[in-house]
Length: 319
Image 1: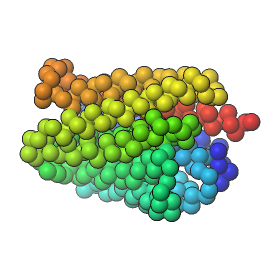
Image 2 (image 1 turned 60 degrees about the vertical axis):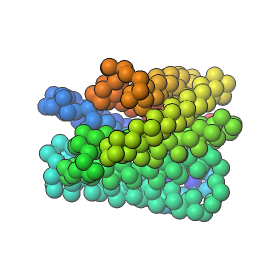
Image 3 (image 1 turned 90 degrees about the vertical axis):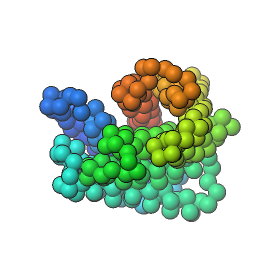
Image 4 (image 1 turned 45 degrees about the vertical axis):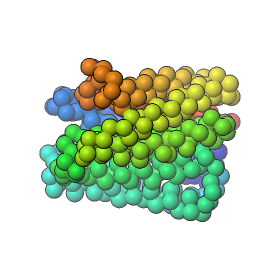
């Protein structure tokens, strides 16, 4: 743990307040427009709760001051709050204007990751995964802006643009960060391989989806889906081992157990969806994947992973 981070109480207060605001948003949005609420709430959960939570954990694991990341907290709070009306408004210039500060925040995260990488040049696998996650989330911020502006990119539907914004917030940021944190907690060859695959699988998946959309090339998406599934399986195995053998609080063990099982379930769906052009599984439609694959990634993997780390940090702060 690092002693260079701001007060843990301030960060935890921000996470709790963000959680309370998100619950209020969820109640209102489900009541007003239940059919369209879930993807919007997923993006708000990332901005209000998960991104600040994982930044806090990363800072606590850093062995040296990280000024470019430490000063991120205050502007991120304001930008996340502006996303609430941005997600409620119809797509257009006003919604895009309210989303623009979040793009700046994600670019700030990318800058922090890039500067740290440039300082280390040859970082260890865990840190390399953390830096990559911070860089990838800026792509999510860009696509979120495109979604709120109502833009069409490469002929993608508005639904795909919105799902791409979600993908680069969750798979882009949280997946490599979880793999990296797992390696930092217990370095191993399996954990290192999970870090490298997590870094590679995110752009591979984006390229595969684009090739299918533009030229109907399906092979690359199948390969990238296999890479994602293998990386996810390795990460799940690493966290299961941490939950069983590591000196972690009971709450952390339970959260990581749920996270690992959810990740395995999610990766099975992802691998089947990636080979849907060769193996027909009728239920694997975009609405099905958004509901089950998305819920597993958001609630089971990302949220439970964060809960496990937060519980561990709280216990460590009391020792």
